[in-house]
Image (cartoon, rainbow, N blue to C red; front, side, top):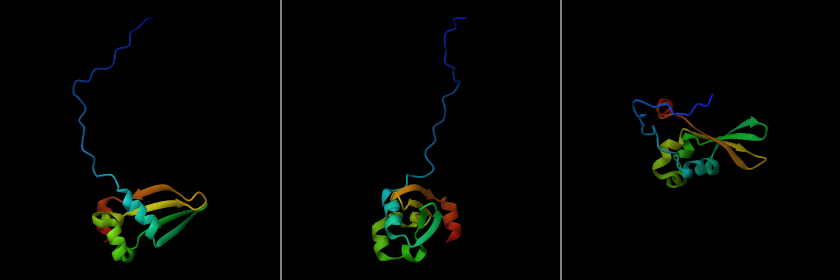
Length: 101
């Protein structure tokens, strides 16, 4: 039973599509952690951090975020209080952000 391995041949090359969105800038995540005013306790020493509409309108926050300010409206950061580190970053799709506004 000596068979040689032969890779499967594809008839057509796989299509490569462009990413749907650009990666989230680090400044947005930093701003959410630094300026968040909506804090939701998730239990286990973890907190979900967000920016309210009022906080997003603050000149200091607008300066910090620059052109990424509208995108920051849909970003939430899960923060671990014990380890003092980011656990996960969530970003809502643009369609949901527009509906909420």
